[in-house]
Length: 131
Image 1 (cartoon, rainbow, N blue to C red):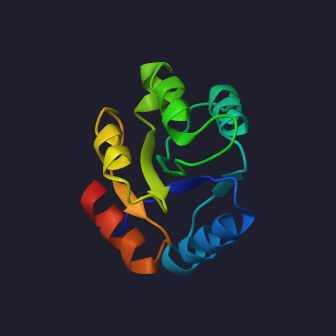
Image 2 (image 1 turned 90 degrees about the vertical axis):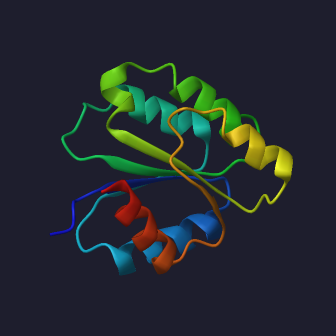
């Protein structure tokens, strides 16, 4: 039986959010999807939301205005341990820059670095590596 996950998408591009939402809906039978256009909104949501028993796979874009994905991850990794262990962040980005890929490895909680667009196969592979 497939473990149940929720999903969070943090991306400033509404088209990328739409694609990710549709791919998740087509791949995972039952889940909640939380979408945010800014890193600040997502961090506020995580801080204020009660810790759930369902882990949340997070897709974080790197290139966003104001607060980029790297700064979001710096702030995210300062959260209490009970919040960190229930969130499984992945970078979902169009960046193929070697510097970005290398810098992403500095974050202890990042599970994967995924290039856009998100697909059903990428989601299935991610879930299978997390279980």
